[in-house]
Amino acid sequence: MEEIRETAANALHSIVANSAATMENGDYIGDGGLLYCGKCHTKKERVVTFPAGLMGPEEVKRKVPCVCTCRQAAMEKEKQQEEYREKMARIQRIRDASMMESKYRDARFSSYTVVDQNRKVFQIASKYAANFQQMLKDNQGLIFWGPVGTGKSFTAACIANELLAEQIPVIMTSFVKILQNLQAHPDEAAYISMLNNASLLVLDDLGTERNTDYALEKVYNVIDSRSREAKPMVLTTNLTLSEMLEVEDIRYKRIYDRIFETCLPVEVSGESFRKISAERRFDKMAKFMQEG
Ligand SMILES: [Zn+2]
Image (cartoon, rainbow, N blue to C red; front, top):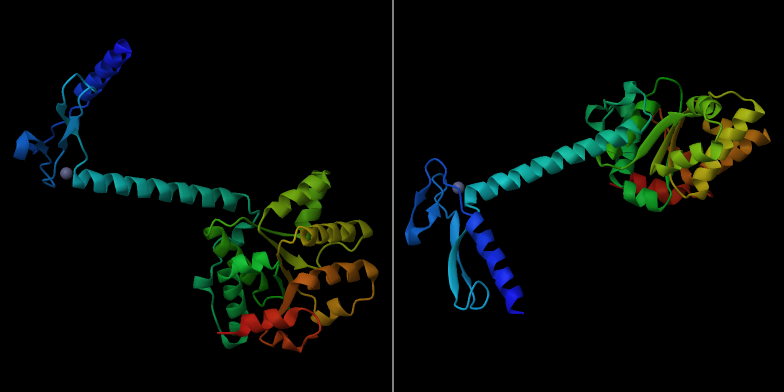
């Protein structure tokens, strides 16, 4: 027992002896014979009292280094910079995994040109992004529909980039690309599960994919599995709302039915989306989106 105590005391002695504060330019010995920082004039040393029995039979007082105020501040700053670098690296990794085309990488609400015609769309999209955690919880999606060249894809990309900046995993792709990828990676289940890892899946340009049974089957599988996972989607399409709601071809009907179970249609041309049927679940969402 005595031996152990002696070994521990020796170890403590050598730790204390080896941990002397370093004297740098401008440092000086001040009150109590302690080392002071020449820059911030606070202590770089303090006295520690080791109770009797710890370093020897008697109480022992020793000077040990401590962190002066300016060093403390510098360490805090370094830590913050390191955290910032890590955060940026994480965002970059999530961005790299987003599959987003380079032309949409810089799409941001801050650079959105808001005019009368797109004000409502801008409000809905930015509100969707700002409330994404709620949208995710409710499995609430959007489908931007309207003619070519109205900024639907840009708007969807703004939502995606807003979330990516918040380190929320988003994938933005299209069925045209998904079908190409599925040909290269025949493991459909693995590919779809990769898509479903994203908190938000943005599917650009619905309706431009091939209309073969094979292609439409894959489109349905992606959307259906997303619904089953209860994870939201944002889609864009040049199709009109009635083209989607009144379609008779069963291959399309089951795709659109699935989409409208969770996605609020937003017309991109300025008209209200309120004109669509109220018996669907749109009303609550529409009300929420139009508030404030
Ligand atoms: Zn200092």
